[in-house]
Image (cartoon, rainbow, N blue to C red; front, side, top):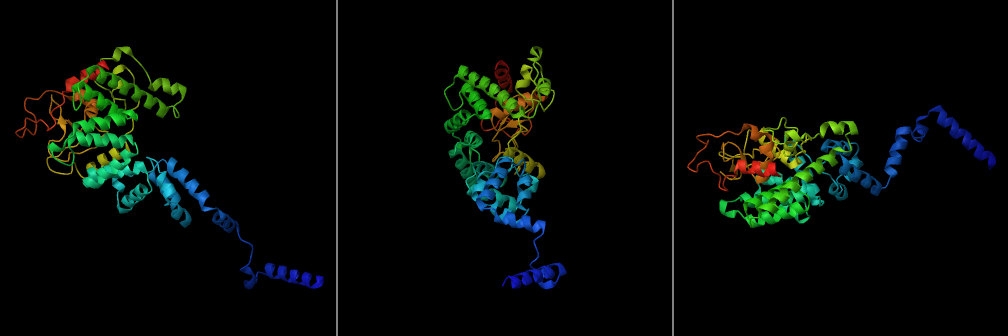
Length: 378
């Protein structure tokens, strides 16, 4: 029996080294095949965990998609609800020039997986860009219920302007309530908007001192947000160069560069401006590609970091001095005044588009000089 076993082993070795076709099918696997077999043996739970981490930390949608097209298994597991639910703001930052049915479907899958950020981004796209008001507002409301601060603030802007409806659809009290909730969650624009509402008595009982306190707090949070976002990438020496303070520049007349933070620069601080939200960037790019607002007589918010269009004529407020620029909110007006409009604004004898309303939007015209005094005293 032992002799027969030796004989079979020798025959097997001869067949293997002889390279006969019959034995070549059972040859030892190559290195790539070994890796493939090892990859296939990994449990799905482990790969889903890895892909979830990737979707939460990817710096752009292309980084996440590049991983999904690596192999069929990644492609299948990458569409798992646990992976899509963790997708970050940067992973969902689809550009308007790359918009397609597949991009729309990707955001919809993320919404179905319970991704709150995807609810807000897709809601803004549908409401303002695709003009599907009901679906867009519903998605933003879904995000707001989950305490998503940008969604709460966007719904507040819709309530203040009566966006998607008529002038009679405005609900100032609801707008103030939504702003207050978003400000409580740390949204700087909402806090600034709430401060202006309190100062002007817009939708709430007037309280000038409390309004000024909120504006000061918004400036402080703005600085803290900029410092925290750049602390990880800026060295100590570089930090001293881009965060500078000169008390003699407190009353300078214009911001020298659009890369500076528009409000803090008036206090002698030169810090980078906060990056716009992907939804705002998408809207600005969307309407730039299409040559302007979605309809005749409609205007875009003049603040470069906003991107919101009017949903009806004369929905936004215009500058009370020049009548050229217009804003969806008091927060956008205050930001743009310090960013660029302060250096450009000059009185005009005759306002443009003076179509029987004196150039005044339905919500009234915000006093630009009044906004200037508020911000400087903050």
